[in-house]
Image (cartoon, rainbow, N blue to C red):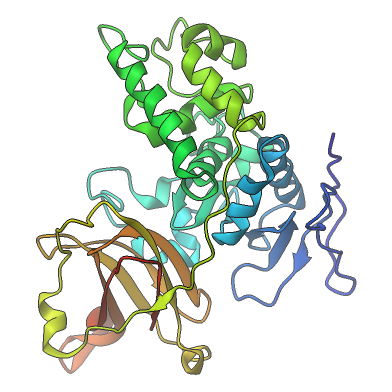
Length: 379
C-alpha cells in the first residue's frame, strides 16, 4: 500500500521527484513554468498544477493512478509514458479556462462541441494526451461543491479514457467493444425511462464501469434505487461480462503489447491561398487512427505569440482546438488520416479599424493534413 506524503513544498529546498521504478510518492517539485508552478513525477508520468493546487491533491492523484495500474500488465503504464500522457489539476477556486490550454474557451457557450456545457464549468476531461481533473474531486469527493454534487470519481473516469486510448492495444480495445455491444443488445444499462451514460460508446462504457470497479459508481440506471449498486460487487452482479473484461485488464491477465517503434514524420504545412479552403478528407484510410504532435518552433519559444490550433471538419467548419504558445509549447492529439488541422495566429486589433478597444482576431497561418502514420507539426 502506498503512503501519501503531505510535506510542504519550499522553493529553497525542492523535493525529490517520485522515482520511475518505484511506487514511492513524494511531494511536488517547483517549476519555472508561467502557470504550472508545481510538478510531480508519478512513476514516469507528470502531474502538473498551479501554486493554488494543494500538495495533498497531487499525492492523491498519483496514488489513484498507481492504484489503477498497479496490477495491470506493465506495458499499459509504459504505453502511457510513451504516448506522453500527463495530468493537469484544476485548483478548487480555478475554472478549467484558467488553465492555458483551455483559456481560449472562456465564456464560450456550448463548449467544444457547441452543444454541451461551457468549458468554464467543466471539472474534468481528457483533452489530447492530457487528463484534466479538479482538486475538489480528489480531496473532497462526496462533499457537494459549488460546481456539482461531486459524487462521482472524475479522476478514475478520465484516467480510464487515457488507459483505453493510450495504454491498451487493439486486442484489449476489441474486448471492451465486444462487451459494450453485448450490453447494448441485452439492454443491460437501461430501463423504460433512461439509458445510462455507459451505453454512449465503448470508451464511455469502459470509463463508467471503471468507476464501479474501483469502489464508486457512474451514471445509475435508476438514481433513486441506485442500480447498479456502487462498487465492484454491484458491477459484477449487473454486468458480468463487463466486470470480467475490466478484471482481466486491471488484474493483469491481459498481455498488452508495446507498439512497434516508429519515427513520426514531420508534416509539410499548407500555406498561402490553399489554407482558406482547407478541410478534412474522406477516403479509405478515414478510420486509421494516428497522433499529431504540434510543437512551437524553437526560435519562437520566447515570443509572446498565441496560436490557436483547431480541427476542421469535412465541410470546412472550424471546430474544437487548443492553444500553443511559450507556456504550452507542445500538444499531442489523436486524429485520423485525412483530418485537417488549422493553425491560426492570435492578433490584437482595434475594434473599429484604427481606434477602439483592442480585440482578439484570428489570422489563418498554417494547415496540416494527417497522414497514414503519426506526425509532427511545427508551428
